[in-house]
Each structure stands twice: as structure tokens, then as C-alpha cells.
Amino acid sequence: MIGRQSHNPSMDTAGGMKRENIASTIILEDHLKSMLGKSRNTNYKPWKNQQAPKNPHSPFGDFPKTHINKVTKPQKIDQVHETSHAMTTIKATSSIGKGTGGRSTSVQPRKQNYLPPPPISGATQKRVISASEFRRFYDRGDLPIKVEHEGSMAKIGWKITPEQLDYHHYLPIFFDGLREKNRSL
Image (cartoon, rainbow, N blue to C red):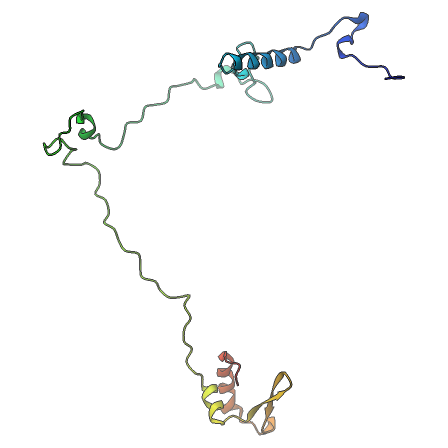
């Protein structure tokens, strides 16, 4: 490279003396140990290195010794289920029919019998809607309306004027017709 000076990190100090970084040396040693361990069929785990510094308890440093819990062995939990004599008495020769099976009594609570699932309620099934009063009156021709088909649109046409309409009689029938889903009117 002409015109550029190369920078050599090992020549950082005055006088050309080599200055080593401790962390990079440890990383290099760990890498070499893991490579050599593969040729010997052993696994090298750098976190099990005894010379490596231990991590602090928190980002603010170690806790006081009075606040650190002592390490205790985990308590052995006894088995809840009972041991089977059948597993301890099975040998090379079979002893079927000689009464050396498991225990005939148990201290465990009795298992629940199988219960069939509850019946299906049918809440999501399609239900039949009974014919409304509006449908009955419309089919008989008793309502003062007719459907006018103009092109692709269907409009309602009145046979009488709105002033002549008996609201006490027809209004409940028209409200009952709001629940009609059939568009063939």
C-alpha cells in the first residue's frame, strides 16, 4: 500500500515494546484449549476455568456476606405413589399365576369413572323461523303495498295514501315484518 502507513497494534508503546492485553490473552488461551480438547475428545468449558474472575452479584458489586444465603442441598422428595412388588419380584423365570403381583390394596383415592361429555346444545345450529304476521298478510294481499320491480331494483309502492293508513292496525304488522329474511316479497 503506497502512501499509507500500516498500524501495528503490538507496537503501541514507545520504543516498539509489545504491550499485551490480558483479556485477549485469556480469550486466545481458551480458544486454543478448546481446539486441543477436540483432538483429545474432551470438552473444554471456559466458564469452568478456576483462574477466571467470578462475576459480581449485581451491577453495583457484591452483596455483603450477611445477606448471602447459604447453599443448601435440595430436599429429597418422597414418592407419592406406592411401590410395586411386581417390579421387585420379576426375575429371569416368570411367575405368572403364582400370586406375586402388585398390592391388592391401595391408599390412593379412587379414580373417577368415565363420564360421557354433556349433550350438544345446538346453539350454533340453524333454527327455523316461524312465518311472521307480515308474511301471512302479504301473501293474502291484505296489505296496502306492492313491490314494483324497476330494472334490478325492487321498490315499495303504496296502494293508498299515507293519510288513509290505519296506523294502529298496520304498524305492528310492519314491525313484525322487520324480522323477515326472505327477499322474495
